[in-house]
Amino acid sequence: MLNTKPALMITVFYSIGQGKSHYTVAAVDTFLKLLKDHHNIRIRRRWMFQCLRDLLDQGYLKRRPRHLNDGNGLVTQIPSMISFTLKGVAWLVKMGVDGARAIHKSMLSYLNKGDNRFPSGDDYDDGSWRPSDPKERKRLEGLLGIVTKSI
Image (cartoon, rainbow, N blue to C red; front, side, top):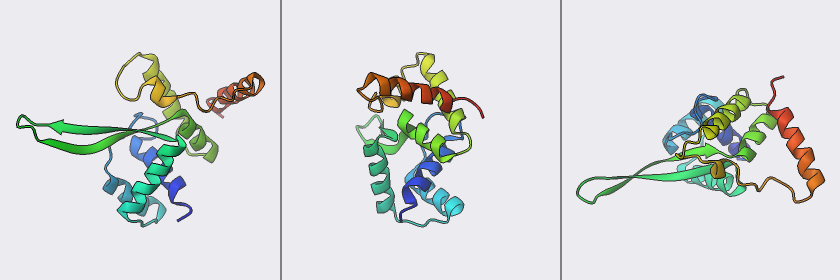
């Protein structure tokens, strides 16, 4: 079970489209199938929800619940929109996942367009990764510039 969370992060990444999109609306069953097919990991839905909760709490992912309202007052929950945060994308780059830089670039271009839909700039970068010491902040911002460059 120790490899479940990194494999889940990579699975979420591949369901997003390897940089072609900046969010996913895949259902939990889709994630379970991708984990089984690509990583040979079989887990139950409850553990999947716990892993997603842990990744959300750590700040790697951001989630936006979605609902459909019909004309009769019936509300139906549909799969949430899941997007990476800057911290999550940096982790993927650190793990050496192919296309992680592409998703970072795609997300930044989306945010620079000023589109107010999900994810917003605050969803992507809440500032929690920035240290309070100015010297450390400058050093990390320099490293971030290196991370986004092609090798």
